[in-house]
Amino acid sequence: MLDSLAQALSEAEQNQISLGELALRKEVERGTRPRAAIVAGLQRALDVMREARARGLKGDVRSVSGLVGGDAHKLARSVRGPLQGTVFVDALAGALAVQEVNAAMGVIVAAPTAGAAGVLPGVLLALADRAQAPDDALVRALAAAGLVGAVIAQRASLSGAEGGCQAETGAAAAMAAAAGVELLGGTSAAAVDAVGLAMQGTLGLVCDPVGGLVEVPCVFRNATAASIALAGIEMALAGVRIPIPADEIIDAMAEIGRTMDARYRETAGGGLAATPTGRRLARGRLGPVRGA
Amino acid sequence: MVSLLDIIGPVMVGPSSSHTAGACRIGLLTRALCGDLPERALIELHGSFAKTGAGHGTDRALVGGLLGFAPDDPRLRDALNLAEQAGLQVTFATTKLRDVHPNTARLTVERAGQKVVVVGSSLGGGRIAVCEIDGLPVDLSGEYPTLVIVAVDQPGTLAAITAELAADGVNVATVRVSRSRPGGVALHLYELDDLPVPEVVALLARLPAVRTVRLLAQVS
Image (cartoon, rainbow over all chains, first blue to last red; front, side, top):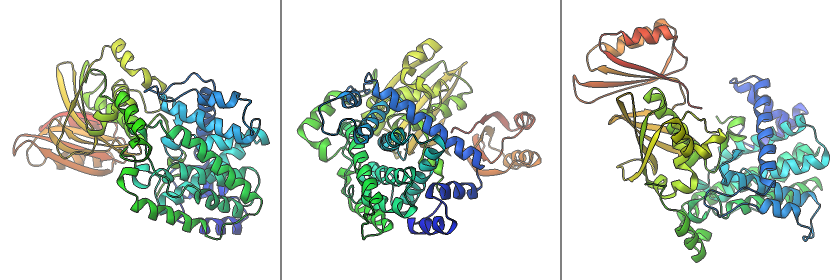
């Protein structure tokens, strides 16, 4: 697709189009699918995201191991927190909901991965609900997210096993930040600023799943990543800029990932997975498959 | 180059692209190699599949693939019960295989008196590779339509097969031939850019050295 956000921004500005529109045109240029098929694919992703969120918010999903589930419903229904009734809580609840559905073997969109599948729907659907954004605007926002993800894949990684959770929920937060700015009518420059502002907040984040399962802390980390995406959107739309270019922040993420100890790259050898409670929970739930 | 729909996708049953979606694809390819739904399956799990398979639904995803469910089919979650209803008898075991990827399973499937043994690995992001069929080394991704041909190891067989494909205008993306011993049984794998017409597949089956021909659809 593209190997830098600087290049993407300059092409978008030259053609006076948004990042999402640029992403759609670039995808058409690859020549594997016509535009209608690409848009249909993104619309299907959007539909699956909505279904997964609705399913998770009902509150009756439980993960295969029984460790997680039901918290999205709890958060959405609470009247206790200081941010209840805001888009912030909607985004957090949506992210929890989709990731709970993922842990329960429900159908989700791996965007960019299954383990980080809650962030984009959490943020984008919450914003779209408030702004009453039409689906074609959401599809373009998803395309913008895809462009950011493609650049991250090219320059760094989207795999927790390679780069830790900064490469999964961190990348998802950066993608959601750009998509959110586009959805709310911000400039492409602001969308790229939002990528940097979100990603700087997830640098160094390790992948430390208890028992190696995509459950704890993954479900909660999707919610906190959504909050970081919202922080990036809010700051970028206000004109806040981080002096380090987004591409260099992505490169820094790659460098940190390369030098990250293997214990923190999805092996369940360190971090929360290696805490006494993490180990105890894993022992009780891992086990071989039935009959093996 | 990475596609937009690879980043915003795939649509899949969770929780893990390697342990669930990839496992399902291994099951689907094994079903295709078997010809249809097997009657019996022994599923031996290796490495991370053995260690964390239950929590990732790897067992259900492998069986779901054998039942013909795609990675985005919500029935994967109930695959173990549905297998029983469909008349597929499944046994699980753990194993230690040599020189394979940590996410690997060996499936021994039987149907109508025929047995196929498949070793498949999930490489990450849902991509898979079948690395062994009936003890012979292969490298099968399922990303292309693939012809799997069992033939007698004798001169001219590969030329005869590719000539038939060429006559149909089918381009071969990759070829791999392995054999038990000189003059023994040879396993041919042709990954194709296009699907050959059924007449060509029938012609291939009538070639003198050829024992069986199986056309596998792309496992996407």
